Image (cartoon, rainbow, N blue to C red; front, side, top):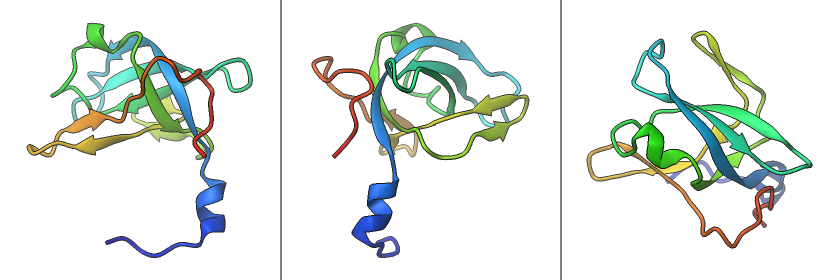
Length: 113
């Protein structure tokens, strides 16, 4: 189990629904990854993310997928790429990341409550 946090700490984390609108390979990453562009709607806009999800997804199948991401962490430099959001997922039985995804009925930009 992880460190216990206050509910107020949890409320500081801004987790939103987004839709992947572009996926490209990221050959300069230390570990295999994709560069994603994710649309979070009018209020947040389009953000970039690096995601180590190459074992479970092809570039083509990612476009149009609804995902969830933390949108209020500071940007993080990953090699030559600036990742602006943290795309969320779970490890599968082989320790490869599977995206935490949502149904298409949840509007992009919607905040987790």
